[in-house]
Image 1 (cartoon, helix red, strand yellow):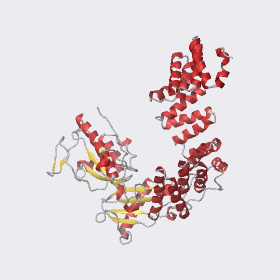
Image 2 (tube, helix red, strand yellow):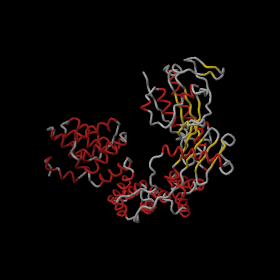
Image 3 (cartoon, helix red, strand yellow):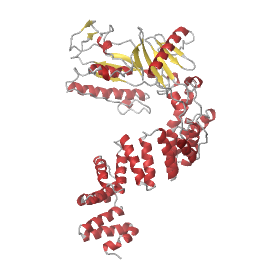
Length: 553
């Protein structure tokens, strides 16, 4: 039977913490240990496929989404620059031998159907964007269903039908696209908008041929990859004609695939403006005018700033809050308009249990970038920690205005409403959060309790049952589950749920009272009286409130 399996291995990411035995095998080289661990997991999958005798007829594609700089060009991780340290990644393809002819590269001859594929390398640029069209071609999907793909199928290259040597291995690029642009040269496109979208600096875009790479930036870059694979010698000034030709090809890519140009500054409606002003931290009259890319800073000049921001973030994760604050304070002095810096200071103060200081810094971040949803959400957390529910709700609602699919923000807003005893407002927020992230059992349990508080017992029960099936175990959960069962006429199940609640928390007075009430309804006065007495031992207010029902004075 045909099957499709997608396996995502995320381990080789900072912070690098390979499990044993890989940590010991690669002392001082934790990234290599992470890679070795990932390789081992791929090996386990392949071994199992072979055990099931599915290997020969199965297409297998292994791809990395990016590499890691590890200090090259000043970048410690990935995503900021688009040099080959992060852009050139493995792409390994094994075709199903039963369906495609193969070439035995050791003999230089064409093999027959069913023969094991030889190993060879494709030197033509290909990209990650070519993987989906390749899978579609392998599955014989109709062209009508794949016409929106921007990549190309690699089957002609893999099988040798396009005049190229068939191969199992080909280089790829992170987030690129490959096109035969009318001529003999195949180009791969790459981009990073991280510098612009996160810091307000110039974006990076590039085209790569089999020999040259051109990077568009305030100071353009051209590299001869054949003679300078590490991209150290910028030839844009010396090879102006080649740089100009590749720049025109880049323009062709952009015109073909770019959508409408988005404003660099989000347009705020009047309601959002009033929300900002009501918080008391942002003072402005209108959004700042858009800035063209040509006016933005070159990321090459800002890599030191990025490294300091990331270092401060690491210090915060390690609990070294004072060091992080000192580093960010020094950085703010030289980057006063960079909204990420006060945001990072605010997050550091939150982790440091200083929400009042966090509010001041997060307000600065919003003043510099009123559409910065993460700062608004962090501001909501700070107010929540101080018990300022109205301000917390306003800030979180503002963040959701800019990013309505942030399920953590939905949960935060629901918790604010729950604490304000507004279950009718909390319920839809919990529901939307679960629509976005159905596996969050904590949210599902809270949603079930809220529905029970609203008297929607038929709606609450399936939520309770899903959370219980996921082994959710908190006393308040079982108490409200008992209430739900009781209201639906499931007396035995209600008693069992209440008993589970007091087992988890032997001092849970309300659950003892509910047990007393259930046994009283069942005409079991001795048990009812026993549980009522336990309630009285734990909570005198409840004892007095229900004294009349149990014949107590």
